[in-house]
Image 1 (cartoon, rainbow, N blue to C red):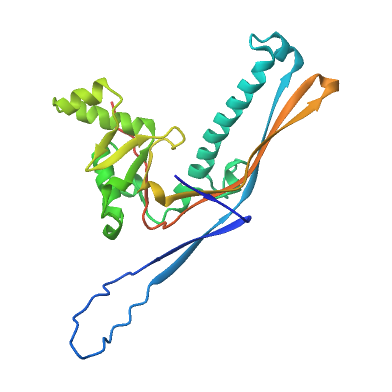
Image 2: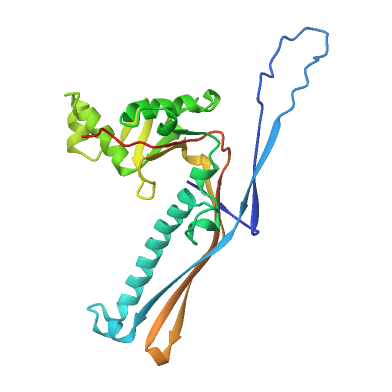
Length: 260
């Protein structure tokens, strides 16, 4: 995804383009009568504050094999986990959720302008390639000029199901899909598994169309509590996510894979 450094608690993501043809015939000695005006659209990031508190007792710090060095290890672990949690928020955020963390903002799955569902017979829930084809059909074709910029972000089971499809073809590609972790592709578009993608769900979008903003960068502050003989590390930051153009994306839901 593409990061934007927010200089305010809100940030406008502006896009401009021409929706239709601007070229026409030119006639010598005559002024052109075409006045093509670009279309302007704006999406907005509105930062929300998130926080984590991770504590370590004095005895843990003293008895650990790393001793005082374990504090740095803990900070590295906090930073790694923050990245995973932010990905979960940016993908699955839903202000109607019962989860107090996910309800902070709407994520990419909810903000996409195009959605298909196997329950609506948009694709065969057991056929991964039919799902991929349906997703491609759902995207306005003007956005698919360069497929190298796009990615199918999928749940692990979907990526694994596609590997099984390739394996059954008995080709060199099938052997590679079975024996290596090589990144797969479908019709020129990469297929990547994402640990925070919900089961049966896939997102198709250009990578640079997925935008997230950080207003207050990650801040980790120690909070010493002598009476409890422990130190809490308080992590805070303000973030949000959106698309540059939500029309250049599609979400598929309801994939089950072959039923045995």
